[in-house]
Amino acid sequence: MPISRCDLLRWQFDLSWSLFEYHLERLEPGDFLWEPANTCWTVRPDAGGRWLPDWAEAEPDPVPVPTIGWVSWHIGWWWSVAIDHLSGRTPRERTEITWPGDGKAAVEWLRGLREEWLAVLDRLTDADLDAPAPYPWPDDPTYTVAHMIAWLNVELTKNVTEIGQLRMVRAAS
Image 1: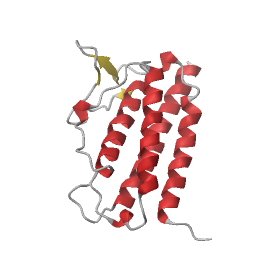
Image 2 (image 1 turned 45 degrees about the horizontal axis):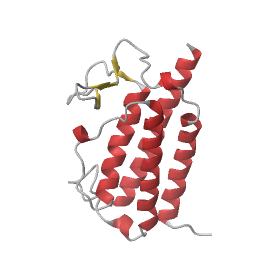
Image 3 (image 1 turned 45 degrees about the vertical axis):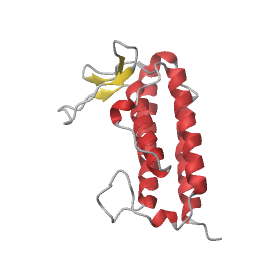
């Protein structure tokens, strides 16, 4: 039985999300800000109480090991911007997207983004997938919305793997 490209991309996303839920359900409050190395990126509250990520415009050498809090912010950042693009909203800047402030709130934030993303996916048609990708390659017409969704699925899977590995290393240490 043939499957549409939209249905295939949705299936791929659902698979990635099921792997994420496996880890989300097992995260402990202390997991989010646990620093696994001396050179680490995390999220920190500023003077006003907004939780902001460590960041550098040029990737440092060595690349800092991120905390689960940082990776969860990172997911929220790129996913929020992708949703903005495909929802016809002005995409937010990286600096406008902050971490919710604790693990439970971060998990709920990510689950909320999943719901927003599913709404986006559910209204796309196979024809919509052929439009130029507005993100993350806005100036390259060879990439389509289908590429953008496939990239998002892979990026989510990669970040889920990072969170899972950090969670397991902390639990074993």
